[in-house]
Image (cartoon, rainbow, N blue to C red; front, side, top):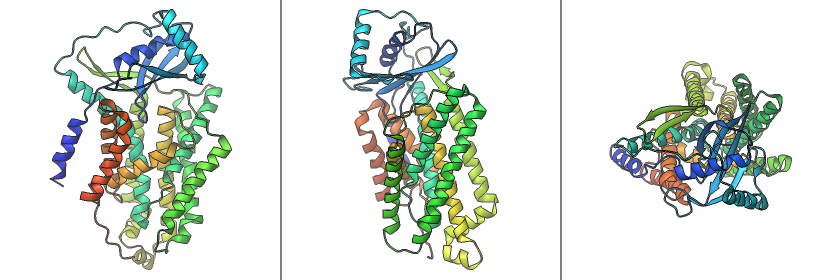
Amino acid sequence: MLRILPLLCLVLLVLTGCGIDADQDILCRKLIPAFEPGPVTELSTRSYAEDRRVLRIDYRSGDQRHWIACRFAGTGMEEGRRTLVSVATDRTGWLTDMRFAMLQQWLRIKPPRDAGGAGAAVERAPPTRWTPVLFLIQQIVNAATVACVYGLLALGYTLVYAILGQINLAMGELTMLGAMLTAMAAAGLGMAGWATWPPALLGVLVLAMGFTAVQGWTMDRLVFRRLRGVRSHTPLIVAVGLSIAYQEGVRLLHGARDWWPAPVLTGRHDLLSDGAFTVTALTAQLAILALTGGLYALLWGIMQRTAFGRAHRACTDDIAAAELVGVDVNRTVAATFAIGGGLAAAAGAVIALYYGGVNFFTGYLIGFKALAAAVVGGIGSVPGAMLGGALLGLVETFWSAYFAIAYKDIVAFGLLTLFLIYRPQGLLGQARGRGD
């Protein structure tokens, strides 16, 4: 372990990147007057974790909140970082080729006016010796949201693996279900005028978590319970089949289009500044951190201070011996699947309300990355799942900000490969010594 820590520190230092590209931010803001006839206020910019080439600017026009997203040909040091390739808004989605060509022509022939700062030049002070440190802090703030998504889903993986010694690869699709349900419910709230009302958003979260908890319980009751004594790869193959079935079922029911919920909790808070660079955080990011911390604390309390937690630990040590001393194994395993499903839905709700663009394929790559986080942290360990999610979120965010984004997933799974080679049990995991 001590030999690995210097290597991890070196990796984090090397991968340190910068914040949102100022040139891209200015160009995207210049497009706002093409869609808004009046002044706009409360502008805040964020980048997407899954595609750092996309910037999204949330703003207020009158009493309404809107957003515009700009995709560029490159990011960081890439050649095409100033080349705009597509634009989307909350009212039009991604523009068609014809409308995008007209927008480019408008940008060339009509200098945009100052729309509450949307088209104004930004005066920046020269960098100070603290600017690189603030860059690093901003990247940590950006990585926190990604880490929360990976950590919540990794908890679902690790709880099931701890009690059964099997990986449920369909867990990512429960995240997709939670994201889709949240997006659709958020659309309904928007039509009712409650899109930014915190109690309504909390109700949507509870609804999504309850729905996927039932889905997790049903998975165990109808599928995995019948395969519990099988000593082969059959449960893993069945999990892959379930994953594909969920994906195709949602695609057939709702189509392959993306869902883009309206932005919520878009207030921006300045944390630190040296005049040249300001570290900022959105209200949504703070809410996501609070949600993740609250859910983790609740899970810890359940695992440490309830009869279910004691039964889960007994089954983790030796499921056959636990059954002999009177533990209801079937109920314990079913409850574990339900809790894992609820946590997966929480991750999906974060994806839907913060990042947007959810579809039937959302849970596929996210699921594998969360599994990588669980393995890195020590699959079977609840603290390890959160640690793995934090580490993966940091590495992925730093890489996307500084290096070519095309290699981001290679880095993420390369990290998993290194841990599988040199520390198969992960950072906080232990070698399994099950008696079953």
